[in-house]
Amino acid sequence: MDCFYAAIEVRDKPELAGQPVAVGGARDRRGVLTTCNYEARKFGIRSAMPTFQALQRCRDLIVVPTRFEVYRREAAKIREILFRFTSLVEPLSLDEAFLDVSGREEEPSKLAEHIRGLIFQDTALTASAGIAPNKMLAKIASDWNKPNGQFEIRPEDIAEFMKQLPVRKLWGIGPKSAERFQRLGIQTCGELQQCSRIQLHEWFGKFGLELFLLCRGDDRREVTPDRERKSLSTERTFTINLTSVAQCESRVPDLFEEMMADLKATGAEHRVKSLFVKIRFADFTRTTVERSGLPLAIESFLRLLRHGLQRKQLAVRLLGLGVRFSEAPGETKSQLEFF
Image 1 (tube, one colour):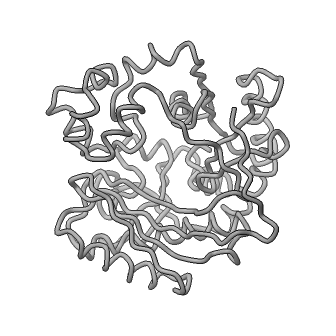
Image 2: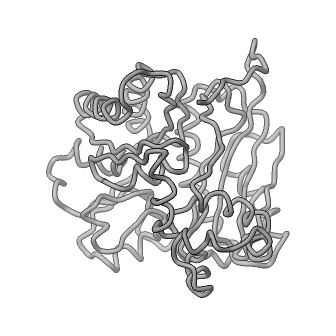
């Protein structure tokens, strides 16, 4: 969806149309934006930006509080439309999902146009789509013609497409790592393809081995429907690394609200068996702290976060909150095939 939360606020309050609008926290130093519309983005405002900083960039920015109950209601309408076309739907969040439509006879691009039209008809909200042979490429393609557009990467186009693709577009690459690549003289995936597995492992550890495949457009993750998901999480990569425990803690409430909205949308709250916090440090190393038996509350995630931050005295570039599920009654071990 295009600026989902902000688009809903503008739809429900027509007087906001054409104005810079953001959804998120209070105007103090601990407030953080969840999202903003395209008018606000012209000022360099983005999600996860501290509210006070956004207001410095745009004094006329209109900041409205989140209404997750409304967002969940609209997301349910959209998800119902998606399930008309395939049972293989993997939600990423309230406003994003992967669909495996390889079993359908229609051309994927025509099918995407049809789905986007139905969404607008039912919600008055625009959606963008990416069509590709795998999840990473579909995600990249979905951002190519935003807002209210779509883009297709066909199998025969992957090699040429990846050559010119900026490395910052790859899954897991944020602004800081893009700067690191620039210092190494690497700006495109074509240039990254010249590096060996050994080089990438030396530079980025285990993540380097993933990069070796991703820069070639090779993503082997399957589309996993809700009923088969073993976990659910929300994470955010920060443009400016977080350098204190207080800064990290201030990001937890918004991440928690987003994760809970996604969790309630799945209807799997009763299946939660453990909570976890994921941290990626400035040196690209990752750590996860997981515990069972904790209440599903912000305080539990703050406790896990503090424990994880003790493992390294480094700045933080990514934070994630998540839950793991127990098996649903009658759930089998069979795996759906992804074509």
